[in-house]
Image (cartoon, rainbow, N blue to C red; front, top):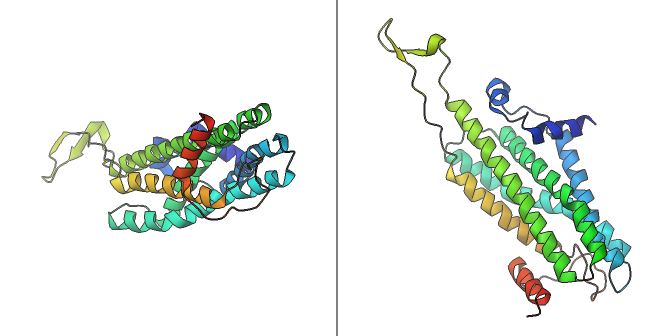
Length: 254
């Protein structure tokens, strides 16, 4: 239960508010949260696979297991592919985050992302049971992943902004004054502008989304088409974008 309490504090902002960051920085427990992330991903994967239990061609129980395994693998592989570039480019551009802090920050963001994703799981399962439209279920899952990704990346951006503000803040002086070079000379403290988050982090957020989308295409199927026999993986062809366009055309009769 302690790991879920850590996630609850994260969602409430208690782990990343300005007071906590200025007092202790990013020091939350990373491995218990990582285990919770895996459980949330497995749970959503099972919800994705529900469609295969009620599809017109008959139930396919193996698809539930496949999706439950593939969703955690999707995020782990995407992180493995994109994290080195985040660390190297961030270091070259002067980001004052060690590799441990950076990894903890990304796991925090994934915790938020997967919490949102898992919260949508029952809705996905409901529509998977109540509709026979395979393109609709596929696009619903794409929309849910996009919404959860937006929440996760927004959390990452806000936390980076708070970290930058905390680390740029001048040392506290009594009565709102700062000491100048001349002995005994003082003047009113002037608030420093809040630093902007480096563009490298925004670029990485886009990169993470693009790599994640293509990684999902490589690991497909997650939902399982009723017209195709079960398989753990499909042959490499086309791309994620082409797959979404194809689903849109099928859904709207194009």
